[in-house]
Image (tube, rainbow, N blue to C red; front, top):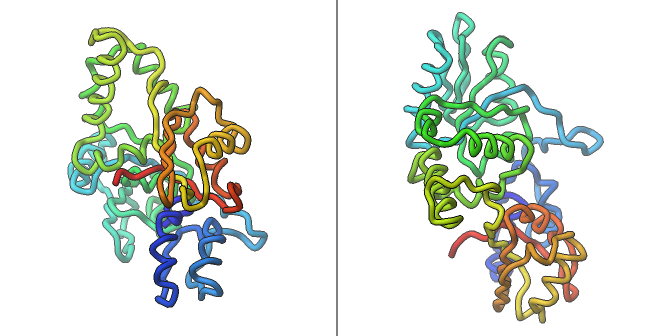
Length: 305
């Protein structure tokens, strides 16, 4: 559970105040307000990823990653080994790490490692092989907090993209290099469990081209420019909140342009705001922690109900 997901639990936990709480988090510092409301004076087990001054710990190593659904990881391992021409790999699927007698020429992880496990896996590689971690889209933020990451291009993804124009490939590469697509990854995560990420990307390109001009051969100049992403806000009619309140907070507190704000649904205990994809990260960060109508706000990406 992270800071964004905590908002969805407020109503449920408020009805069961005497129940025992067990809270799992990779960064408890993000949950200060939540813990104060629902797990006051909690016993903390484990080590938070901060140093003695409270600053985040540095990355433990460099690593490469690929977003692959769990069912597709055996095939992804084979694709990666072929791409690397590895002959003596070490594949970690979770559990105790038992180093091989001879240093491997590749270290691959099909389970998400902890900070300590990733450091140990980097040592297994002997410094000559960066660990390769296969993850779900929602795990990318955590992995970024413990390692300096480089994406791994699997050959099968490149093969399926051969028919795309060079101009469009350069635009996508530029967005991945200089932009932040965490919000879009979270939005598409359910699809990655059913389809290969390369197929999802191809479907998005097809939809985008059809919406742009009705011509399949026309290259869209700015991928995702007009897309809207739904943001959940833990504030509703019972808090006397209105759409005008939310628009004002988005503009003043989050710095979101008025043109980037779409439809707003104010319901009984929460609201849903449509925001341009390019501004969704700013909207979530800017709204979370602000006060509207006397209540502290928590915002996160909306999960379809």
